[in-house]
Length: 337
Figure: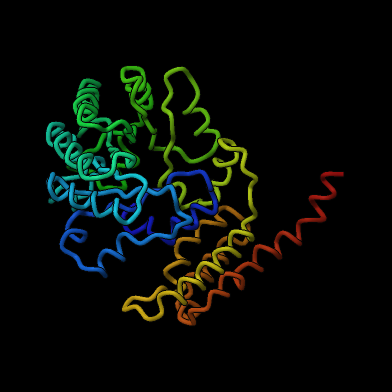
């Protein structure tokens, strides 16, 4: 989710799913350790409404990760997460992300240093794949979890696919390696004192409920790009898991208008002030698969309209959807009758 789940995106997700735990995009340690105030603000700033929110770190040097974890804790994050699952070329060049699964001892050292660097109430967690390349041996991921858990990690977020480091793009790595949910269930069975969160391939509420059913099911589910491309699906998951009433899309947009106006006003004197386009890009999936959705996305992607930097653009985009609803309401009433 690099360059996707920034603080504006997470604010939208919080409106859609009040009980979800939100995660930042992966932040490498360098900008946090060597960057100044501007870099810290860019990578770490978040709204108080986002709690609980976790900072996801990328790196492989234990001292650097410990320092970055301490900085994240000081900023008020509720969790520090180490990414051991990203298969991109960038992380391969830096020998972190999914590459780290080949070195469970190193990951354990990093986790131990991070645990020691943050207050005891802030958990250090790990996100990982279930295998590397085409090795589908269960022993590989079992040993990884076992070694890393001994260093103080009690929560593992498992993307239930292998990471193929050579030959597949990041997009293909999310689609080509087969999903093996049974591996995560086996981990939950073999490590009953640990918490496992299932990631990968989940796109709707019914799949999430099915994944959480059973004696050795994972204790949580994580949605990534599915939540981004069809963000309103989060309201359905929130509803079935927590019974939260489902808000209308229009109500969410009204809150995003207020949020955008506040952000523009609060950052107008900064070197990089917030603009409507920074927020609008994250709302494009709100009307996914809805009649009028294309017009909504087109309006919020129009460079001329965005250049006006007016939060009212969100409301101006809504009539496409509202007109459709008004048009079909008599038909729906007739069907109900």
